[in-house]
Length: 336
Image 1 (tube, helix red, strand yellow):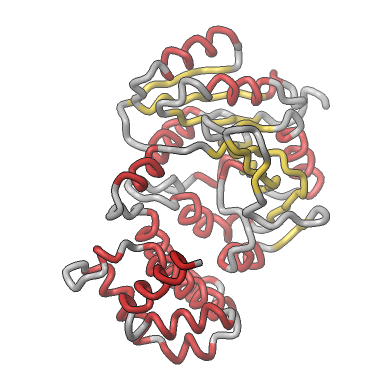
Image 2: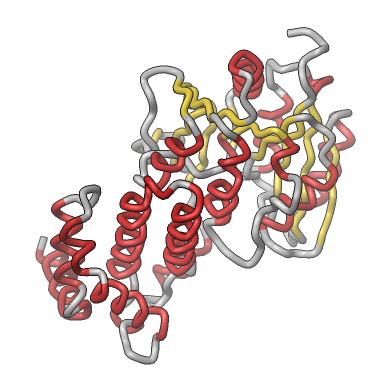
């Protein structure tokens, strides 16, 4: 590649990943894309384990690495801070416990230029702590795909696509006019992505699994094992996001409304199948709202062409007696 290739900013939010950050940063610094055309922005999100010190050391070692520090405010705030300092024409993101293939950004930049698009994506794989490859959680296409924004959104709400910005290279000007990662919520990538898609236009999906997600036993898993009443807040956020995308679809892509409604039902099914029995009570207003939604949408459950038969049965059984079904479901799983 020549020096006329567009400049790329890679933003790495980091919080208490001292043992993993170095591998992440070095994988980005080992790209076949010219390092002279890359800037790597580490944002230390108020780490307490030496992550910030390591970030500063890496910034001394590599001329194109810079490390910023902020009080702990979450990944979205860290990404937004990185965006405010980015100078690249295109922007990518890497989580500090993950790592990338050396060819990732060269492949993304090449296809963006060749296809004249503003957003491109590679595929990802999941790597366990012992180094073994886990089953794919996102479908991998057989060949390079070019899809419209509407088609890409359909892929996402059908749970067949990757909502993460970490697998993508995005034109930085798409983050203009208030397009930032929302703070104070999880599942933030999806929320920003579906709002950005109309402006992005076409999206290219590459089949190469160049982004490597390092699956580690995190604090949430340990807390869940210790506290049977622990319920990750992401299950609430995915329901709220489902409602947000349904409102969005009504305005931008009304043809996708049945798909969006299916999405809202499936996200509520996921919520009801994971919420601890102890939290399934009338004092839990959000839980009650989920159950009422199912009861008010029985016709949609029955007639929606995108819902699987299995999901329809679960939803129709959960609507009248969610606690009873969950109790029976738990008993069957114990026996099995």
